[in-house]
Image (cartoon, rainbow, N blue to C red; front, side, top):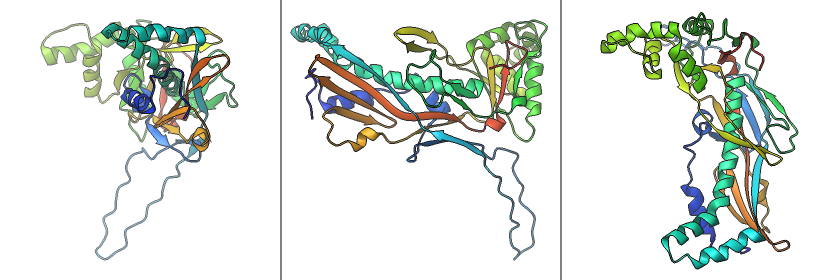
Length: 356
């Protein structure tokens, strides 16, 4: 195996470092858990989440009545490649000599370790941040649109629509910032419209929760519950609002508060991948799967690069002699796909029509 320029790195140490990373900062592993696909195809399945089919009362020694099996519809597509890298130039590597000089001190040793592993953690986080962006775009607008403004790579498929029915993507009767609007009535209307299945969960961003908690009709809605529960009347919180909603068998609200940096052509922009002002009403906490497939790099046995694989991604580290540089690359063949699109409802609380 080729020695990296940063000769402090040994494969077992790099593997231990990568295994120490976790996915806790991201929403996608919970909302779209990983699922392996050897065929490199993702699927968006429409499951059987309707009201249960009852069994029959039958006589002894008789054959059990057979019921029809619902046809599960699906979309599918190719799992794309996600990748990013970072290089250390010769001038960057010159810093290594200085850090080695001070490695005998606690501060110097920490600085050396940070320097050695900085790019590895960077690419690990970067691949998973793109999965976060893809997952939350799918969940909040029902599709994924890649463009020159939000993606620096060359893609062959720039638009995936998960086919949420048009009548289940709505604008608000009035923007919820309008005090004459009625958010609770609209939530009840959506739940009522989902005939044959339940919508126990609703995901949204902080801006929607902030507007709800000061909305006069929401304050009035929660006040009786507050008085019953604690003997007081106070400004509602998301916890007390959810308790009032639960009592009426309405969806529980959960906040998606993600922050991703998108870099295109060297320009960085911080974004929340969740579409601002949108509520997604869903039948289950798990919204789909992140489909991941094998990497072609695993078929190349002659590579001299250091290659560490963890679940859905690989981190490669290798050096170039001329010009002198050290490269770190994160790679993943993976894609989050929304499931149960036919049982998902989207509401834009900031606009009276859906135009996402």
